[in-house]
Image (tube, each protein chain N blue to C red):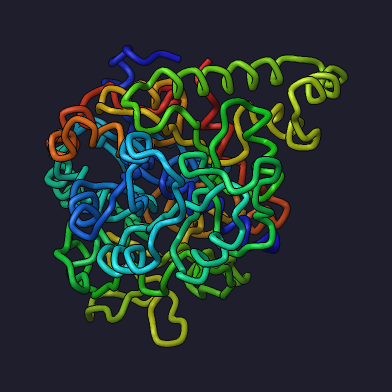
Length: 230
Length: 267
């Protein structure tokens, strides 16, 4: 373990890297999925980490904490600036809340997609659930969906395309530069949404194969990227 | 709880990684904690430092207070049940909070048995001083582990001891040939199947937070660099001034620095 080697943060990314915002939440889980897809990945934390990123994933976590940290680290402007440069952004769960331009009973954070979202819309952890659905734009196979104290997208603007609607709410949507999902594909064995996002970023992930929906996949797979200090 | 529910409960803990969980005793403190960026709050009637001072029997908090806090914040709400007191756990589950801490900070209700956490749908976090305790709690259904530390003292030494012990035992396990695992598991009181899992993963199979005596942001960062996934803070901090460290967290001096990173942060 090299804690004080700051050169790690100075490495320039070549175009074609997808970054995962490494402030709080399910970071390793996304990295593990990108690794399985053969996509170059990086944790991003400092302003210089964003240089040349083709895409950025804002992971699940607590949206109030992530919003606070984006402000403290002065990263909000950096994200906006790189979004304007053409970096695509995908927000899962808390990430989707940060990207929305309207949040029920709260201020928006990045406000990059025209939609209204309600935080923690299902109830407590006892109301968290797993399900599955076909998302036509993404895959012809049913995709496993994991909702953890999830938000609901209540409505989207006219330039936003609904990817998945369930009952009275929207669970996934996209605009030109943004993808949002209120569920957690990184907590399932399925790579389909990571593949979809990589393609949207102009990258070429490993060829599609049956392990895209690998039911034998273990939720602990992220842990090889999160071993104890030695 | 069935396997799916357990997986969801472990996954909620995953979403708390890299975060700070704060002890709060009323709605006002809960709101301050949420605004300061806490990923969850632990609703308590008395913080551990007061429990230590006052003595007597420490029990589950007043359900009315817990319900008020739950209403006031959108982040997850945790509350403590006494070790082995499964009816307190049933009450907390009925309150529909997000996590139960089966906690040694309260007076134990059962000196032999912990709660059979597999009977519940709600997730549990349990304290551990070493790998054996951690894996036995997981075998009983805990979805998250934290170090016991020494709550209410403002002294981080026990939390460090517990984390170092766990890490040492995990490293030993990871390096030994598989035929030695049986003996190691027997000596250290590890459930065998879980010991094999830890050996394969090189870490605990659930999220592991630091708790018990963390008083400053530097203490929290110390535990993160020792390999914890996140931290509980509260009563140790309140011992000197609840607002001051909250301001320190808010200013983000430490969070912005290179000191705040998990042990694996640079791998």
